[in-house]
Image (cartoon, rainbow, N blue to C red):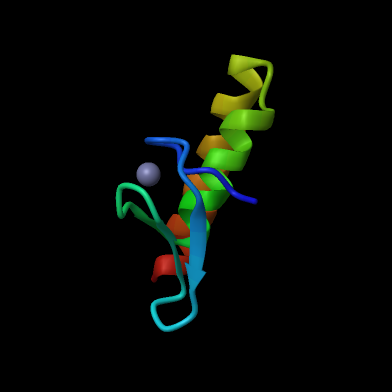
Length: 65
Ligand SMILES: [Zn+2]
C-alpha cells in the first residue's frame, strides 16, 4: 500500500486520470511525483540526493522539447 505524503492516508490509483489519489485528503500524484517521494524516502545522503535530483531535472528538461 502506498501512503499519502501529506496525511499518510491511503493512495489509490485512478486509471482514468493515470494518477494516484489520496482517499483521505484528495491529493493527486502522478508517476513523477511518486518517484520523487520514493527518492526522498530512500535517500540518506543529502548531497547524493541533490545530485540525483539535478540529473533527473536535466533529463526531464531534455525530454520536454
Ligand atoms: Zn492525503
